[in-house]
Length: 440
Ligand SMILES: *Cc1c(COP(=O)(O)O)cnc(C)c1O
Image (cartoon, rainbow, N blue to C red; front, side):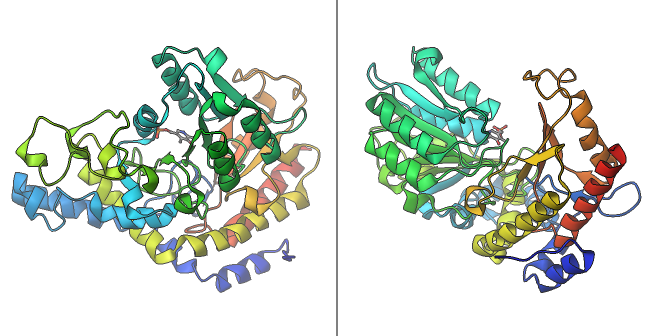
């Protein structure tokens, strides 16, 4: 049982003992209008900039200026194999073998490309299982794939809902849905961590159940990569996709990541949308007519990749490599545990944490539901259902907290272990407490 205290001296002592404390200095922390550093709890939306990014990007700009096209082979970090420089460290972050990981495109694009190969519906087996409150882009992608194959989402989409009066999906209910629908399920596609509730799913159990009924199991790791300690290879996940601008701090619109399990590395029989960058490296520049995919995740590449974006990601992955996910996760559990403790000290009937209490079932994010007089309104219409409730969030922003608001009634706060401190968490709780007092 961890013992936390509602005091600044406690928070400062925790920071002093933190073996990862020096990493904060390697990031730019945005400043509030009063000149103080903001309490940045939005690393789940856009991670902060590592100071080293500039050097990595400038290096490629210089080589481009110096070498022009010859930079493909003669740059200090030749552009031709540039994506390979990221593979190993990216694989470390998601618990994969290098052959299973590639950095390319962006998240939703990768989701489509991998569904081309891994969602192959038949008249008997055509359903896709997703969670309610799935990120809208995932829902659009999945529904459009269903339609693309001539099916109808009304028949082919299974949406997992929490039980009446609950917000979190129970693993037992997910598994029951999988077994009940059995051989009609073609694909199970869940967020590793749900972006709205902050719930982390049981990857191993869900994957096992999915495979038992003969389905393919994929995960969208937008909110899990760089947040949880993942073991994609050991869990036998078939495929996964993620973005790198959230917890992975690679900047706005960063290049995304994809995982294809080693079991599928040589499945050249799978349909795929091909492009020259996925073609066998030995013969790529002989420009043959016949497409010969690279074995492993690299074989799903289509275009030559954005070097400047990859340079930023490379700087960031270097930091993850030095910090190690295991250590980050250890700190994260404590940091979020502290945030939860403090919020529970000040919470009254107006706010409630909807994220699971068990650290195993969440990452660093806590989703705080703000209850209002008009809480019975179920609509999502901005301004109609949320006016009163949103004011608390707006006051947080004015006080130098960066968090975000999700309709209809949730404030998401995500202290990340690389650059957030126990003192950040304490200051946030003080501000929240004072705002709630003044709203009385
Ligand atoms: C952030 C996020 C996205 C964003 O998709 P992009 O293709 O990167 O724009 C998609 N899905 C989930 C679950 C997300 O959290």
